[in-house]
Image (cartoon, rainbow, N blue to C red; front, side, top):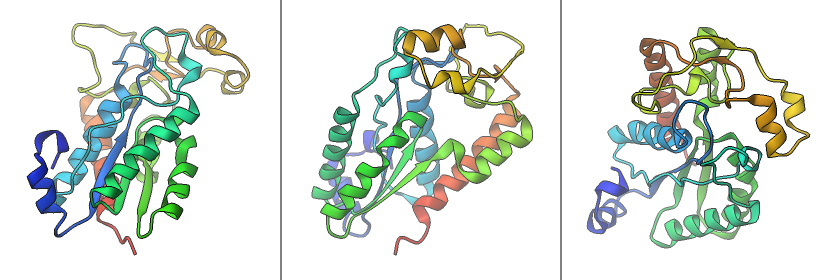
Length: 233
């Protein structure tokens, strides 16, 4: 039940028997040779695939997040922490006001994880509200399978290269890029980050087989579905 494919009458009818929904969080940022919208595409798709058999509504992914370190890459958009906290709070307030009480946030961007305390504060201020925060790509089983297939995997590498995030007609390197020095990434501005990481891949091959990616996706959907369907009390 994607909100983008529903009308308000259907949502009102749903809320008579259930108060769960899913809110994907994405980002618009460089992903080397992949789409700038990788995080939004994947968070919304894994949420929709997971929720579909449960009939739980999935809202459109929030397309902007916290990514100041990539601002030297054109096409990247980053919100201030205060702005993002306000946007997320307004969204949660809207969901609560219209009747949703159990909200699963499916996050697709590591930088957004810093907003988790905002959800904790929001629950304190809204009686009966529950809000879970799920980083889908690094959930235990999903990341475990990624590491089993190829332990050299990171931002903008093969682990984010799904058919839905590739750009038609674009080629990419056929090699394994060495890991960047992650410690050095933490002490420089966006221009310094770009100088250090080059094309944007933090390390690893650029693409693996679709069969391997389908295995990872199936596990990711299963773990996300468990978050929706699991015990909320």
